[in-house]
Image 1 (cartoon, one colour):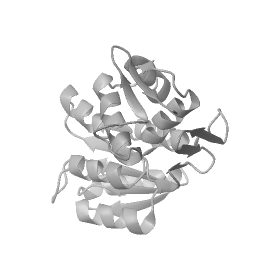
Image 2 (cartoon, one colour):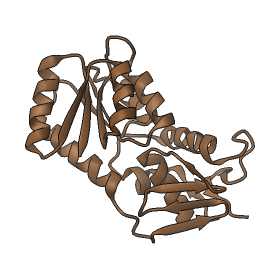
Image 3 (cartoon, helix red, strand yellow):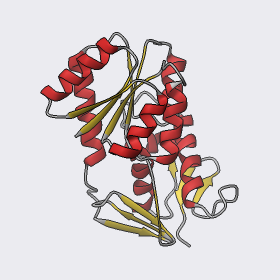
Image 4 (cartoon, one colour):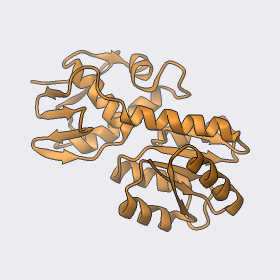
Length: 225
């Protein structure tokens, strides 16, 4: 797997590159936001390990940009251990958040977990159709009214889960448990943020959704009629 490491601290990038090679991956290195975005476009990495503090732009802004334009999974690195910072990173679409200084062994385990989750096949069938939305789990591809849309791994899993249960409303907590995992360090707002992003990608008019609907007092459902 290609893993892009984005950090301006050379000792960290060298250590990460060494350990990624030991795990059988191909490390790529970027020192700032511009290099990161250019390498994502050119190299199409399977994972980005992204530091929050970069010289030219915040890693949070980079993560926000990636979530809107690329399905690549993101693990954020930060010296900020505050709960608010971790929540913000995850709500922006990061798949994991690791605080510096970190255990290299733990980080490699998280890399393995995120890559495995991104590559997991859909146990509910290869192709799921809900109205104008077609979710192809084998290709990890979603088409809406015949147009392919680019989703992050988490957006894909959320839409896939709802598409497997068309018309059924789920609470935010159930969606967190089924899509993020029961032990994930995220809250209800994370679901709302991802639903908003999905609406921007699958709805003809995101302000007046007709597919991904809010069910008052419950949560969300995918309508098919």
